[in-house]
Image (cartoon, rainbow, N blue to C red; front, side):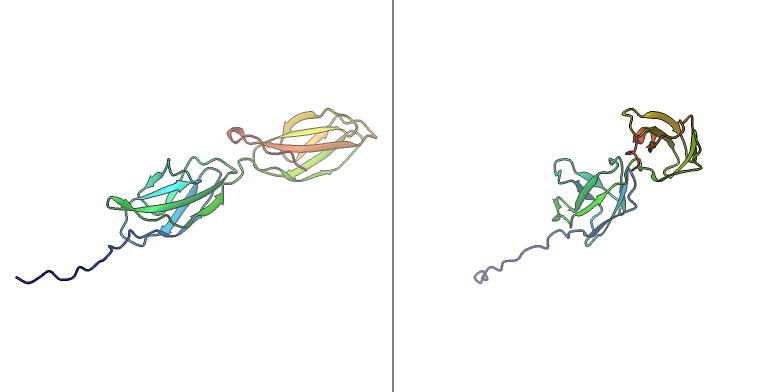
Length: 178
């Protein structure tokens, strides 16, 4: 029997890290993750906003994240499951979900008479709050309607301020128009 050979040291290949994590199709409450799988993983963990205590396990690529808060910035990273271990974390990607209720824009006043005016604006197809006041008054008068809006009952020879806000139901209300 011969003597043992000199020992040789080696390391096993690490669990491959998912590459090129990206986020697409972002809406108010969802975002789609996709990545390049560099090994043979069929299960991954997603870390949202650095919270490694509450990881989301996914089994498909791409994968949609649901129940996100509207108008919120998120940062995500992921890792692959390899047998009983995990890969290193992937690159981080930051995205912002759409605003829940968009502020109306391009508010315009036209066809001004002694006691009325037409209002138009661009915005979501929802009910809007319209507020107006005499420019020197503190209190606004609030109405509800959609563009175009016929504002009547005004007093002649006064200067008015007007603004509009979208009412998006469960998604809340927008800011007031400028």
